[in-house]
Amino acid sequence: MTIAYRLPQGLPERLGFRVGNRGMHSTRTMMLAELDALLSALPEDASREQYDAAVIDDNLLGKGTASARRLTAQRLGELYALDPRVPLFRTMRCLWELDTAGRPMLACLCANARDPLLRITSPAVLDLHAGEAYSKEQMLSLLKEGTGERFSLSTIDKIARNAASSWTQSGHLQGRAKKVRALAQATPAATAYALLLGYMSGARGELLYSTYWVRLLDAPMSRVDALAFEASRRGWLDYRRVANVVEITFPDLLTAPEMEMIREQD
Image: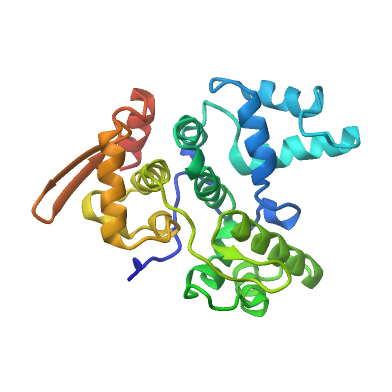
């Protein structure tokens, strides 16, 4: 049994979240391969300017034209921030180095936090049972309802194609012409990040297990709890449980200024 969820509202933009009905999936997918290549080539403390230079000046991602390099750098920056000053990206970047198997899920979580369009499409995927056929029509319906008159029908169709590709890159879908629901891989690092996104969004205690971000993990509550305990054992969060009362904090992932921002938000 998976965890109930609802789409998040009122996300704290100064921590790196993005809200509204615009997003990068109108032009690109979540670009997992490009992100992996970029993060593998640059140090963990690289600046946004260094990321841009690697893509534009060094053509690290092998784009054919200068305009394609600039656009790729822009889209990756919009989707992931690529700036250590942004808490949402800085914490993902830290965990990226610690759990290779969790990278697709880490990218999915960050992309969902940064792209409202991807979040809008999520029920068309997350509400399916494993093995059930994916319906593009349902995703188109969600996008039309969620974006109003902002996009043309051809753009909505493109967003749906890009989003379906992203959900495939993350492991939530599989297949090419005919996609079906799969179960994505949850890992300790991805679980720590999902819980952290919930914490940044205002959830505390047991409520951390019922957020949208935890739903993306594709794991039952007992598995999420076990992964949270393992993340604690590895030093990525503090986990305390007494009977049914759980307390989870992130003293080693969040800096003092970031904690202050979260306290001010609370």
